Length: 164
Image 1 (cartoon, rainbow, N blue to C red):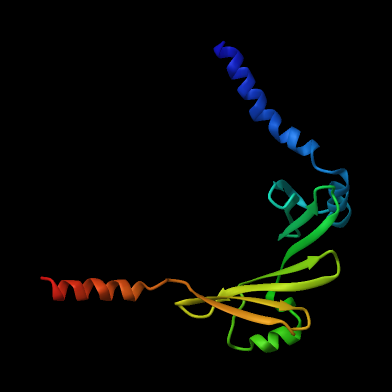
Image 2 (spheres, rainbow, N blue to C red):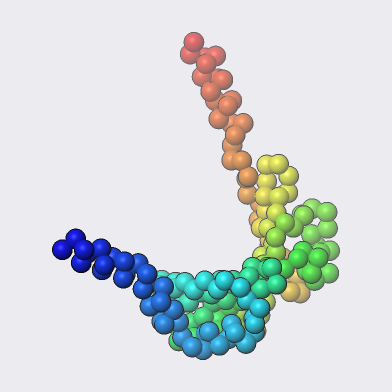
């Protein structure tokens, strides 16, 4: 009985990737092979909540994520690009206020495209910027990198002084 269970577990463990590979729609695989012939180490994931299939890989050293609908139709591409490749209008809006560390260019169904730009503003704050290609919808958002570090120390010191 133990041997049967061990064989069954081995089958499930080793056969699962092959089973998952067969469930990837041919249309999705053909899309990747055609548009990204140099794609390396393609990892396929199913996003069950949204009924999507995700292909994650490197293409010429850059990270790429392609989302497909369950039937294999292309939905979205997220490609890592160099901050130098941003449109000039977006660079002008960033000026010296924001220094981009990473940029994702996101394209939906080949129609519209936007950028997600992330980086650090200073020691305490990081930022995310969502922007359309024409720079019309330029939305910077700041968030604390180290939330309230000084506040906690101040409270502890105050407690020690007030309640010896």
